[in-house]
Length: 501
Ligand SMILES: C[S@@+](CC[C@H](N)C(=O)[O-])C[C@H]1O[C@@H](n2cnc3c(N)ncnc32)[C@H](O)[C@@H]1O
Image (cartoon, rainbow, N blue to C red; front, side, top):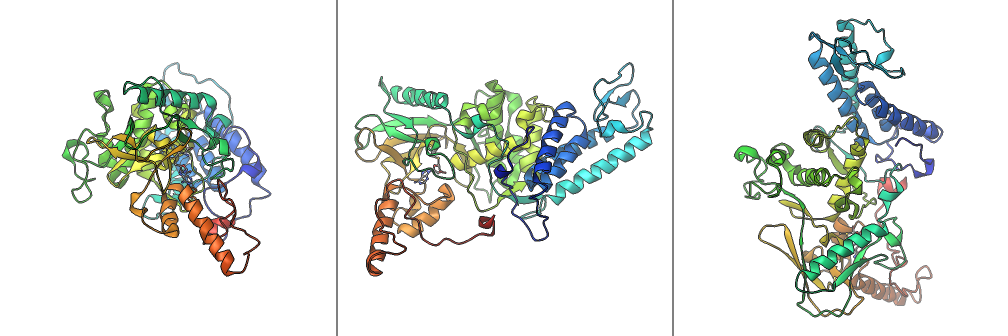
């Protein structure tokens, strides 16, 4: 974000609306402004003006969810400043975005536009008026970028890859793969075996990519030896999970008609410090509780493991990002900003001065976690090894949850040859459904047409039948070899407004 990116990489998360100004000519300037404003934030993280200015640029660039994040930080800073206004013994810091003791505390640093550019002798009343104005403006930007749908203080955005994301966070490197395979080896050798039963490999669906990704970044789990029906593969004890059980003090706000998880300790691990009790999150996050607790647990893992950038944490780095989603995602002021910011502050992370925890990073974590979680309405759980298995409508692996709703047991459900990919069924409700129904339903999980052998085979048969009916070819298509190919996918799809940009 602090370096200008190529205009061709710009993929805004808000579709264009009638009345929007065409940004083509202004785009290079806006991108440079974004980089300069990000650097200004690095230099002056406690200056609300810096956050507000970047919020406006992000809004212009059509990243409403990020504009809300920056405006929210500007608001938090203004509130803090106003809370001490008029108290004796303090004066505003050099750029006047923070308080410092009055005696002998001359600020140092450069002077660039913003709060500091005003008269040094500005009186308290004048300062108060300016910060109040700033606060009102930040509030306008915050609510203006939430379209209040589906609820007040909520909005929508589309999942898109942020163009400033570093290369190392876009693809999963060989070192990560080696680590994953060590874990698979450890899990399977736990059961008295010395050699691993399976491993993660690239190009899981062949050499054609999916989801706009390079095929080498599409991972899958493959058998390393012949395995028999019923053989137990491994248990994955996820470290990151949440549920919508009761909040602190027996609060039942999240119980969804009384059917929530009854385990009051669920968001916490036995190894957690008492100070890191996450139950308050359930009390605050309402219907998003499972989601937000999972995110907060990720952040706690980062802190415990001393990982400097959360996207470098192996738990997150292994998860597939997914950017093709056409349906808007909900962004909630409370769940996506207020609670994560409060939690990060609790963990001792400076949300203003530490760019590794910028809003876009939190959204990226959330996107990966949502795309890889095993979830039902009550629980949300990312199982680090299980999340590497791909889906097939004729799976060879089955899974079951333990009594704790966390551990996933994985076993073979038919004989498998060495080198075969291991697949699970993501959604068993559609097993007996015809191709279209299965694919429709699987979009929820894959956001792509299912590329499993059964779907590919059935689609080929359909294409051949259709060819025969039309006397030898629709659009010259032969329905030919479909393995790992999306060529057959000529069926007409509904067009969403956002497909057009
Ligand atoms: C839980 S992850 C599985 C591991 C993933 N392939 C990876 O590289 O990390 C789920 C994602 O894998 C891909 N995927 C899994 N099964 C698929 C299938 N049958 N057809 C197409 N894509 C599939 C989709 O991108 C899906 O969002």
